[in-house]
Length: 77
Image 1 (tube, helix red, strand yellow):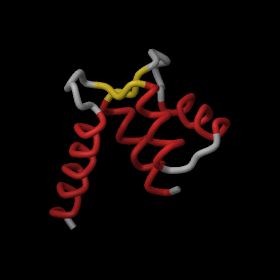
Image 2 (cartoon, one colour):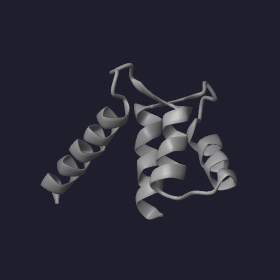
Image 3 (cartoon, rainbow, N blue to C red):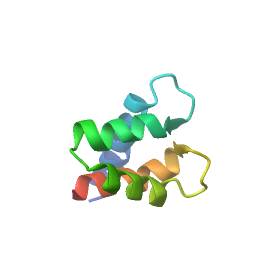
Image 4 (cartoon, rainbow, N blue to C red):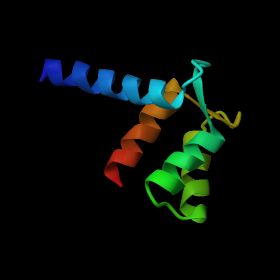
């Protein structure tokens, strides 16, 4: 169970790095929209709602901590 926890954390970190390709510490809202609409088939409305929820500080970016919650939501879809 303990190893699974670290495996999941590594998996999430890897996904974050994949979308944060310039290593700036965040995923832009444009990138988040691409993930949700183009890769996962979300509607515009559902995408906008998800971004409103997961951009918790409202700065127009999804940082790593926000991405962890975002990733968990995406996995549930």
